[in-house]
Length: 317
Image 1 (cartoon, rainbow, N blue to C red):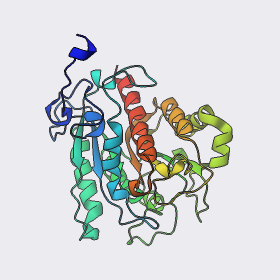
Image 2 (tube, rainbow, N blue to C red):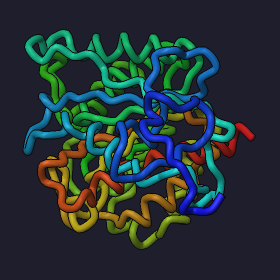
Image 3 (cartoon, helix red, strand yellow):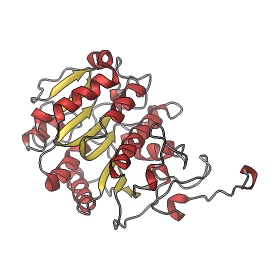
Image 4 (cartoon, rainbow, N blue to C red):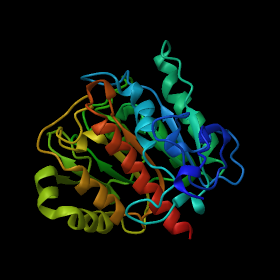
């Protein structure tokens, strides 16, 4: 069939199969993550992508509640062609659905952590791998609780401009102390955990290895990946990517931008090189599209997930 005779099938998000890439115009159709089918049927599903539209724990610019929408929109550029850098369509072998968004009652902030944890547990219980689109970084805490309930304490690999180890009173919701609380609750193993891209100073390290931004840039993608492999080893691990790990030149659309960060290429290359670790879940957080320009930040965030999915597919083959 010639290109002029090719008939595109639109709205793959509702009409397509679970397996197989989607080919439809980038500029039209129902938006899901990488055109994955919207579904709540977990039978035979390898991985689930969902959104958690919550930003009431942010300490600076709000707007991350719209992050999942923006990531879905930006991901439409990934059509059914072979994906870079693997050269393969991950959905030939990896069955992935878009779950939609977590049900959150913003009038009852006290119920939010439990709502996120409960819904995440229901997905993880099926054996599906959970990929979360935030949302501010507080959401990683209930996500960790849900994953640890199934897998036990995890190594945390955190790409971030901030350590998120500020004081925790055990009550307030904050995206700046989720790591402190996770360590207190025994959710993560600090001796196997590592933070990359840090360029602010917090009062505690909690025993976590820190590769600050300038050091990470000097190391390059391979050096970053080697350090992560050494720290994590064969431990079960969780990946959290705060998009502000990127320099504001690459990620203006975030709540707390900090100059001097990594480039999108450096982060993506290192994530590609750590795909063989024993991952049990991941998230991308802190995308605030109201401050974005030309979807720069949303494109970066969606590509982080796209690279991670390629790694999951490679391990399944």
